[in-house]
Amino acid sequence: MSLSYLLRRILLVFLIIWSAATLNFFIPKITPRNPLREKLMEQASRSGYIPPGFEEMVKSYEKKFGLDQPVWKQYLTYMNDMAHFNLGYSISNFPKTVPELIGQAIWWTIGLLTATTLISFFLGTLLGALMAWSRSSFIFRQVVPSLLVLGAVPPFIVGLLLIYLVAFKWQLLPLGGAYDTTNLPTWDISFFLDILKHSILPALAFILTTAGGWAIGMRGMMVTVQGEDYMTFAEAKGLKNWRLFYKYAVRNALLPQITGLAISFSYIVGGSVLVESVFRYPGLGSLLATAIRQLDYFLIYGIVFILIVAIGIAMFIVDLIYPLLDPRIAYEGK
Amino acid sequence: MTVQSVSTQSLPLPARNGEVSGLRNALRYLRRNRQLAIGLGILVFLILFSGIGFFLVDKNTAYALGAPAGKAPSWEHPFGTDGQGRELLAVAVFGIWETLRIGFIAGLIGLGFGSFLGFSSAFFGGWYDVVVRWVVDVLLTVPGLLILVVIASTLDNKSFTLTRMALIIALTAWMGPARTVRAQVLTMRERPYVMMARLNGMNSWGIIFRELVPNLLPYLGASLVGSVTGAIFATVGLAGLGLGPLREPTIGVTIYWAMGQNALLRGMWWWLMMPILTTILMFVMLFLVSAGLDELANPRVRKTI
Image: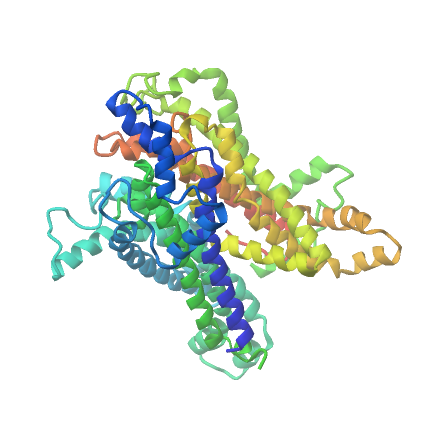
C-alpha cells in the first residue's frame, strides 16, 4: 500500500471527525438560544417568580461552565474533551453520562447495520451481476429490475409500510422493539431467536431499499466488463459459464462497488436513525429521537458526534481493504 | 436490450435541435423516454391535486381540532381524520404542496451554490480547487440529516417557519451538485469544441456561457432532482424525528404524530397510510424523473427499468 494513499485516507478521517466536533461546538454558539438561561428560567418559573439575582445567577453558572472565557479558549477545552470522549452528562437522565447512554445503544446499531449492509451489498451485487449476464434466466432480466424502484423510497417509509402490512395487518412479526419485554435478557437460544425475530422487519426495510442501488451499479459495470476483449478470449477458450461469470466478469466489476460501499456509509447511517426510531429499536437512532423530544442537547451532540466518527472509521477500514482487492492501487507510487 | 438501444441511439436527440418545434419534439421524446414521461406525469398529478385541492378544502380542517377525530375513510372524509382532529385530505393537499415547495427551494439554492463552486473550482484549478474538493469530500461523508438535527434542535419552534426550514436544508444540498458539475466541467474543458472556441479567440466567459453551460444543462437538471430528493428526504425525516414546525400540516409531521400517538395500536391505519402513500408517490416520481434525465444526459447509458 502506498504511503501517500494511506496519508490521504488518514487526513480524510481526521478532517471528518474534526469537522463533526467543530460543528457541534459552533452551531449552538451562533443561535440566539441560551440553554443555560432557558433551564434556569424553567426552574424559576416553576417556583412562580423570578428571583432578584437572576442575571447574577446566570453569570455565575456561565463562569462555572467556562462560558466567560474567550471563544478560542472554550474551543480548545472542548476539543480536548472530545478527544477523550468526554461528552458530558445527559440532561434528562441526569446521573448518567452521555458516553454511558451511547455505550448501551451503540451495539444494537452496529449489529443491525453491519448485518443489513453486508446482506444488502452481496445480495444487490449478485442480483445486478445476474441482471446483466446474458445467460441468466428471464426472472433476473425482466422481473427483478422492476423491483429496483423500491430503492427510490427512503428506508423508514418502507419500514412504516412493513409495520402496517406484516406486523399490524397480518400479525406475523412484532411491531417494534428489539426483544419481547416479557422476555428477560439472558444469554440463551430463545432470547437470541427473539432478537432475530424483532430485527427482521428493520433489516428488511434496509435491504429492500438499498439492494437496488448495488444492483444498478453492478449491472452497469458488468455491461462494461462483458464488452472487454479478455471476456471474448476467455469465452473462445471454452471456459465454463460459472467460471466466466465469477472469475472473469464479477471479479473485475466488483471494484467500483467497494468504493461505493465506502461512500454509502453516510446514507446508511442517516437512514438508520429514522428506521430505528420508527421501529423503536433501542439503538442510537431511537436514542437520538428521544433526546430530541426531551431537548437533551448534550445527548444530541454526543450521538451526532459518535455517529460521524463511526462513519469515518468504517470508511477508513474499507479504504484499507480496497488496495488488497485492486492491485493497481496497491502498487501505485511504489 | 442491446438491439433496442442501438435503434434508439441513432435517432437525433430532440433537445439539440429543439428550436424548430420544441414542444412537438419534446412530446415525441417523452414518448420514447417513458420513465421521464411517467415521472413528470406524477409530478403534474401531485401539483394538480394540491392546486385544485386548495379551492375545495378548508385550510382550518388541516389543523388539530379542525374536524371530528379518528374517523375512518368514508365518503365524507375520503382519507379519514387523525386522532387529533385533522382532516387528512386537507393535510395531504397542503402537505404535498409544502413538501414539494421546500424541496424545490432548498434544491434550487443548493444547485445554484453547488454548481457555482463546482464550476469555478474546475475552471480555475489550483489551491482553490484542492480546498473545494476536500470540503466537499468531507461534508459528503457526514450525513446531512445529522447536521440538520444539530441545527434544528438549537432553534425554537416558535420562530421556525417552513420557509426557514427550506433555507436550513439548503445548507446541506449543495455538495452533490458541486461534485457533479466539477467532474463534468473537467471533462468538457478538454473537448474539441471548447478547444475550437478557444482557438477562435473566445474569452473565458464566452466559453462558459456559450459552450459549457448549454452542454451542462441535462446534468444540472439531474443534479437538481438529486438535491430536491435529498431535501425532501430531509424535511420528512426531520419532521418525523420531531424537529421543525410541528404545528404545520406537513407529511413528515403527520408521520411524527401518527407514530407518537400509536396510530396503529389504536387501529387508525389510515392515519399512517396517507403519509406513506404520498411520500412513496413523491419519491418514485423523483426517481423516474432522475432516471429519465440521466438518459437524456447520456443516451449511451440505457437503463431498462
